[in-house]
Image (tube, rainbow, N blue to C red; front, side, top):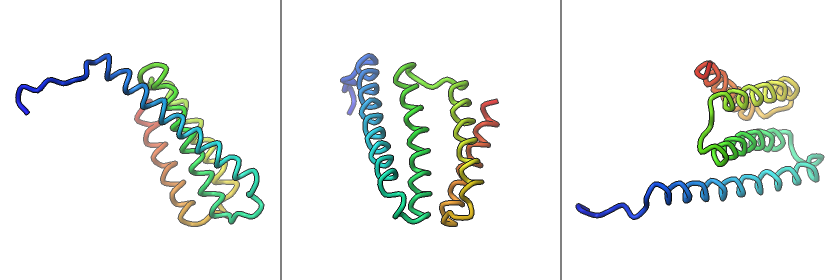
Length: 127
């Protein structure tokens, strides 16, 4: 539409973006907490495939929580924070895979290994 003006200025966009990030953080935290409780209560009856999928989702949620927290606080994510987060998650997932690979669903294992490769590639790109 020619001549139409953008109804939001930069400050409005900043506040809208921040509110959206806070809402997304709340949703992820609720899902993380709900899954954590479910794992605590029902891990003895869940299949190993379901447990590994839940743990994979939890690790991804923890990544997202950290990213959103950083973006809310600083308005973006610094490379050093991202590098530390990637390294921490890579180390955690590596230990998890080594400990549980014999009991994991093959597809879940493949997905985690691909995620690990992506983390390695991203870590190399940040250094």
